[in-house]
Length: 114
Length: 114
Image (tube, rainbow over all chains, first blue to last red; front, top):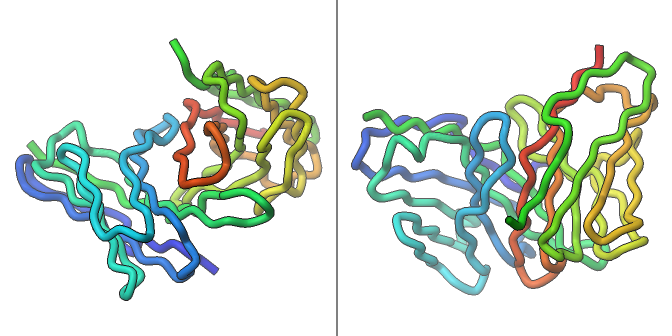
């Protein structure tokens, strides 16, 4: 049973426009949500996180929005750049067995076209 | 330069052989993790360790073993009992395992069992 879902396997946008990556979750007990960016054959890189008590967190070109009632979060990248082309993973932190663990979605491949 | 190193980048083994993947970090992080990524899938947790000489099973621990004898090292052994060992393996670490602290990932090891 997938607790974190990224329903769009891919997204293509033009350079300079906004990229919106979506993520849905089922467990209302998640405390934090994170976004990671991953290039092929490399480890994921942490981008931005948000606590479940907030609805928005911004860091430069990256903004994450959280809608708890809809169990939905999104990552906005403005403006999009070709170097942003990568797979983006949404992840949630769940407290289990005395520690926090990450639960990942399957990822969305973003392509930013010049 | 602080970071997480995984070696080797690519590893080939014959079916039925045990193989050990290396993970070293010089970030002084207490917690370390092993994940597995398969094509089109998110990351799945194999084992994690919150502190030296302690580790717990993740979601897919069968066929794997770990040790945590030193703070900076968390090697993963893929045993012959693992039925489908070919995958991309990622090691991660974090300062702690509570409070929404992000995990930082190494570059990964791609294991191919022939």
